[in-house]
Length: 166
Image (cartoon, rainbow, N blue to C red; front, side, top):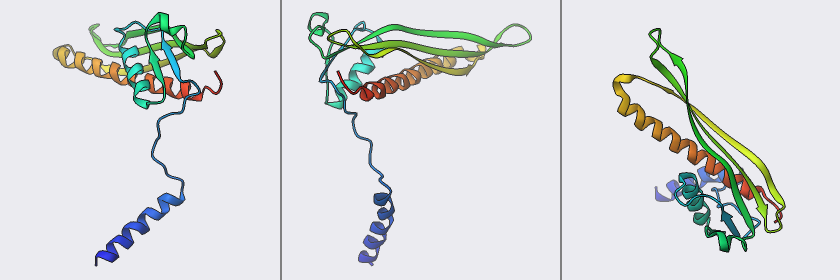
């Protein structure tokens, strides 16, 4: 009975091996050091730094003086959060909001050549609003912003991994 179970388990795994299934690996970068020109208390900068260090394949430099020696420099040009009213009730109360996170950046090497020209990542989410549960909606808004930030950081990581030559 035990040999039959092991045979069935290996038979079930065989199609996955044949289709090229592979667990996600940390990204490969064309550079060894990166300087993040972001404020030290920036939530986006902290998460991006944590993700880059977590790969174990790149050294993150945050000191501006040491940043001159880094292989590449990631320079943000905009990190903005927006909250726009998109729906109101007949009495004029807010019914629906749209949350936006807009992040623009560029990547340059030591010589100043742009490896990634200025690019913008825009995330947006809809949020229904009810004044009777303001605290819960504030918590939901914070959660949506964190989710958008994580999505943005993952997109930046993919773009950094796509850079071929420094």
